[in-house]
Image (cartoon, rainbow, N blue to C red; front, top):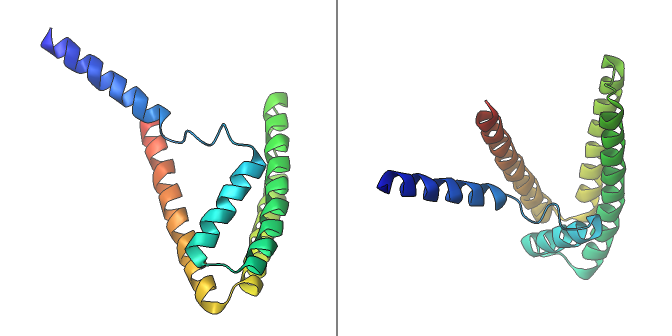
Length: 141
């Protein structure tokens, strides 16, 4: 009986932790996510009001592009279509171009100290993203 109760509690705690993994992702609109992202970056980099306004424009534009990309991806999944190798190459190339353009915009917007801190922040974010992705893959296997 004790073993059963222990297993039951462990199962509940595991399910609760899975549900808590990213609770805000599904409930926030793209505009809300953009606003929170802007506030977080503003605090991290100590941005001026002008920098915040410019960054808000950049993030809003990129949010719209991201949302369009998500819709396109959902549509392809619905139709059961897969991209050809050439189409995947073009999409990846375009994505890298957008990343470079974003980096250039940020470099123009931020001073050297802020840009260096932003770069470190991005590297840390990517590191955590890869770790979470690897954990999800381990759980699936």
